[in-house]
Length: 139
Image 1 (cartoon, rainbow, N blue to C red):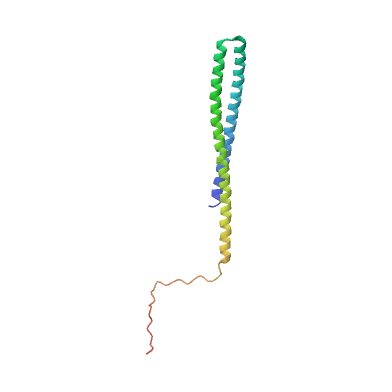
Image 2: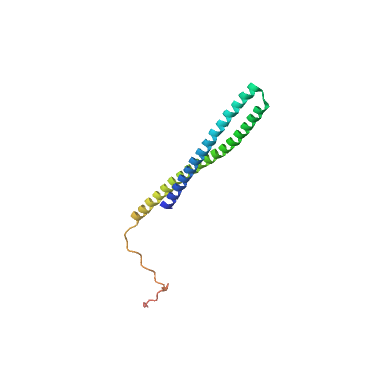
């Protein structure tokens, strides 16, 4: 849990933000195209109202069907954008939490180093077994 995890979380956040930006540009372009199709359909409706010709009505219905398909694609890109923003925020929060955990871990290591006395290391225990009862020469 070191700087590598923080770096990975930040990279994921940047990649997600870039993805969200790309999805935004695609959705915006499709929204503009949908607006143009709406204006075209409105013009065709005015033409139909003036001439009462069935071909203008058919063209208008075709324009509205195209607009609907374009706006459905735009909504898909908008969902991708929202997921990208959500992933970027979650990754950024995770990076911050990992950074705080790393800092806390470093502080705990420093605190434990200060608490330990500078006593000599303990003597190694021999592998020989010492008898529990020692015989004495007192009689």
